[in-house]
Length: 271
Image (cartoon, rainbow, N blue to C red; front, side, top):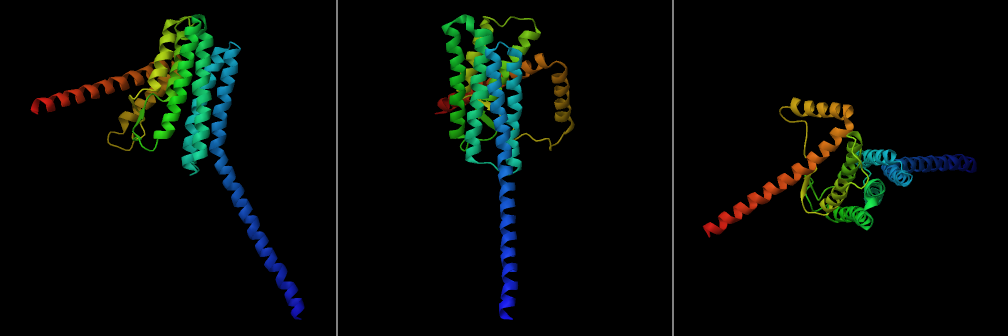
């Protein structure tokens, strides 16, 4: 009788642990899929950057620029998905930076070189290399100093903004009927954006901007108006908005420097 009872208890105990093990495996698989989700967005960012390079080499500059623009969408999504699912990791940060270098450093540099800078010869090569190299330095500095700097601003122009400015400038020139081949404007713009990426100028991140404040209608109405303008006249409005962001940031930096200089002069006079 004891043997029969032992035989009946053993399978139940075994089945209990078996079900528990299965549930643990299912949980780990779900966790693996959740952790993989933001990295899939990052991989899509890389894929679009790679496709942009191929399109530039084939002379399809419109497709190359659109691929970079789409890559920026996935670049925005991967970080947000990681934070929403609480799956941020050091691996994800490094993977994102490497993909950003391809999509927003190498791809825009090749786009500018093939569509505008190639006729300048060695000068065009130097400017394209400056853009890509400065993008790499910008990403490396961001990874090192991300925990130290405040979240309210970026030190140096963010590499996605620089690449978007390049692409929007291409669309703007095409819309206005301007030639991009051997364009001194694109030569200066590409070099300037590269140098701004490694500068110490402060560019606002808008991470501390919230709609949940007084006068809610004003920012919502402005955002809605900008969206309508972007949809209606994307080629013109996008470039003007990005230029406005860059020049307003530089103007604010110049104002802060002037006020600080004035404050130091007053201290010296009092001393």
